[in-house]
Length: 70
Image 1 (tube, helix red, strand yellow):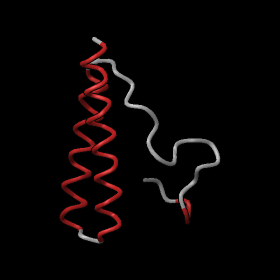
Image 2: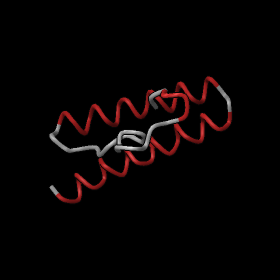
Image 3: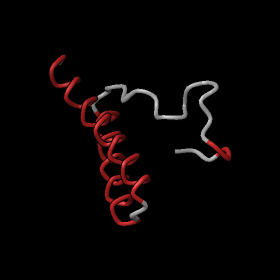
Image 4: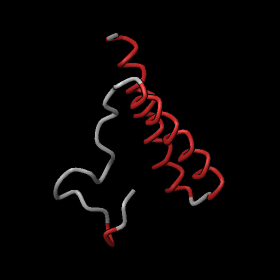
């Protein structure tokens, strides 16, 4: 399952990057679409027992500004 697992993880990484880009753009619609894609990618990964990796800000000492969660 190595190739499949890596493609699922890559989908999660790409979706996380898209969310960050959408946040930077300030476009609420683009952000909503990107967040939906990320939610779906993480859901798929977990449904097939693939660890999607930590979300940005989940590492100790990696708190986002103002304490908000990404």
